[in-house]
Image 1 (cartoon, rainbow, N blue to C red):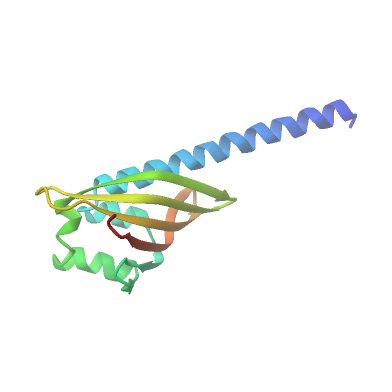
Image 2 (image 1 turned 120 degrees about the vertical axis):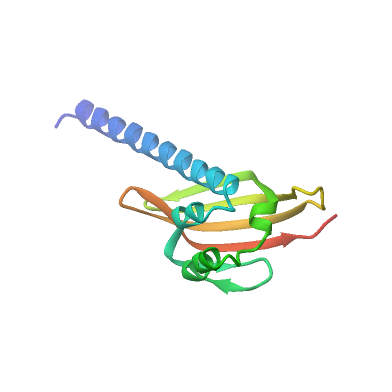
Length: 145
């Protein structure tokens, strides 16, 4: 293959990879936004978390998807999932092939006008069968002030 053809093929693959990466960033960001808008729904959790999830809460409690989903089935999920509006700020997605790291600042605003809380969240996602799912999650309280 002549050098011009090699360059054209390399450019085509580069553009394709850039498009795929941009689509993956959009997909993960959309997944996060949909999840945060629907935290009170079991379906949102089922779609967001991978079966082998390791979740470390801001209070240091570790759980997995089975425990998180069981709370919905038993009606014992935290009231804050339904009583609080959540949004992500400073969202950053770093792609590593079929693995991604999501970092963002979570803003938790109680619907009753209570004190707004802030957290740093870090999630690790894997892409399987064309779908991104969180396999690890860490939440850290940002102290007021």
